[in-house]
Length: 388
Image 1 (cartoon, rainbow, N blue to C red):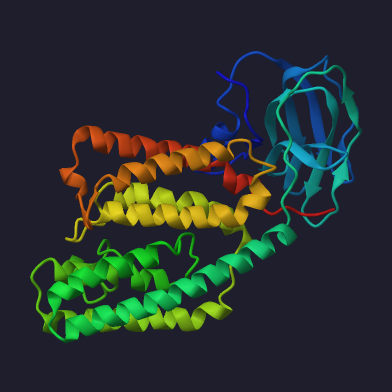
Image 2 (cartoon, rainbow, N blue to C red):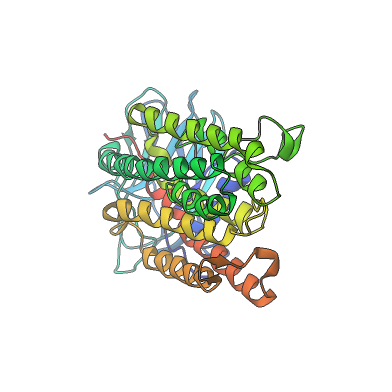
């Protein structure tokens, strides 16, 4: 298969999802290459002398001989760009680190818990051969402005959302259920554009956009609240009296989120993760028709999720543009998916997923899957790292 397109990550002992991401970053390459040196990590030392016979694929054996958990990076010592890494190594464990070594200067960087980083000997690989590219680490300082801009984006969106759910609530209370059905979708799409993934809204998302799954009474359970509860009632013949409570509760929960948002802290690690998770949730719950509670608008929700993803990509663009060669492909596949979805919008009436022609559904699923593959490396690229 093709050589690695990007940073190769090995995380021993972690879940299969992380290992799958590692395969994406490594380009799924296999075969060839040589077994290189054993790099031993101890307290106060990182590897020792090592060499490779020349450029090409090489596998290093990383051995944690210390009594602490370790992380080992292969770096460019001139700018700390990371070519490969092994994370979460327990004491007394080993792990392979395999990559395409190009011409240039390399060094191993070892990090143990509660200790300063150690950098081993600098090793020069001769020639003019291109290998796996290195990635300059992202720091908290890089991500803080992104977090502030995202916070402002959500703040503005919540103002719009509050106005929309109040109008929806007023329609329900007035018994204007046809108008309420027309008001429901714009409000829900505003919420979905905000990118509520990876607990960005804490417990509020479970109140505002919860699913009936897991409740003993299903859609009839009193704990089933939020947009989907109102959707279910509006499209299943419930009366204004039956819907007044759920609609009012939706307004209360949105206003509570709006009041809490100014002091809610955002985990910087989640900013990059969210670009992938928003669309992954859409693939699992919207494109599968799981989250259709009667309106048949899960394709519209997916389109709104793309908008939320693209907003985060815009904010992260200054960080990604110099670190991720595959960024144009991300936009290409998101654009293709958006176009396929928009084709199912017929003057505001969206095709329900079960009514999609088989070829259309296959194209949408394929575009979503490819977009997710292109988005996958962003979480690792934007993971904030220690500065030394």
